[in-house]
Length: 629
Image (cartoon, rainbow, N blue to C red; front, side):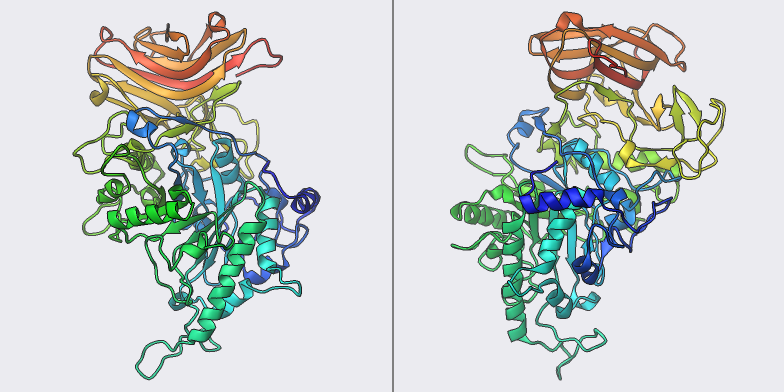
């Protein structure tokens, strides 16, 4: 787990042993109640043994270390840049602790492409938003940090200076009470920090009913003195929170409020907001800043210069990208100028990403229902059978319009964020086992046979396998904590047959879980499909175990790239394309070599059309006791 200061470490030990009054969750999302959402009063009173804590929400998975996995030279240049991913409304999408009997819940699969998941949510009353354990554990397994949210709403939407005053309460010794509680909560649950989103105009006056008080001119009445006083205290709060945050806990600030207490989005780093990142001869106000969306190339350059002059890394600046189609900042798949504005346009660094990126509202694949100019990207939220469009829209975000991350889509409408930022890998040790299970499915498969998932709430375990069942009676399932380690690149195809080939998750067949990986080729020519990036030393007796289906045995080879060469192992012996077959490959000859990449490779002499389905890849050390796929 993350390093924690002594006091918090002692608290964490006590917390893990504490009993919560919250009953284990059976099924369904719980967007507006503990343990996921707290009012400031609840946050102030929070204890690990209290009614608002949940032992079941504690993440036990440490944050995995990561290495860059660039496919192209352009990606390799941009290793310092980070990507923060902030779906708008995670409390509505992911607040579950057990598997859910529904296939069409929001999910995410491109963990290798992001660095931080922000659990973005909140209302005027529910200020503190806490990530759900299944998401935190899956993120950590992939080396991705998770930040909770502290949301202080816009005045017109219920936010008030009085609420902010509650956040800023201090004890007799001057300690910020809620700041200390935020650190205790993060330590208890095992996530990685907080984004503080202070969008309440502190100068606006409200009545006892939380309604705006209007001046004679019809505009909101203002108390500028109070606004400035509260703003100064807010800065002190942020400095306190950042200074006390233990190693591994990150504090981010959203660019909204300025020093006079008004909400004025700056869209760049300047004199009005720099103190919330780092003031002159003053403590840091945060570790990173999420900048608002209305920026251009000149503002990026000015911000980078200011950050460097202050001794900051420009990658502490996360330039916001609002992807929602009904807003015109950087709407998904339409606006592309921002990708160019974030890269240097001259000199030795030409083309290099100058800052980090914060993608806001990338959940367009799930709950954007379409409008007059832009049709819905999927209807998955209403129709689980539309699952392919849901996954392909997320894939498009990173891989571009052609859904191929190995090709930079120059001249096309949308090149994909992955064209510029490298993927990351955590695959540095054995065993490695994947069933290409995305953590949800229309059906549940075991040993390639369809059956009802025994882990679903109120589902009897051990039901007889039924390979002929036309459908599940329970509308599928979702549990992101059961997601396997998915391909490093989703997806990349190289060679003359790439444009006539498709690679996707198949939710109609699987070996174990809800999906498999399906490659379909429609044209002759060579093809290479990089799947996983590794950085591990192969032991004395490594073995690969696969479960696959193919209609062209031997036409596709598994390609292993090591520090000493490339090795090919043809796949498949059975011509029955719909029948799962096991294949074991002894890799003892590669002892002591460093495995770098696992790919699929098709030769130009194979059949023009073919299909390959992978249900499992397991790389294990057979010399280790109990090593099983």
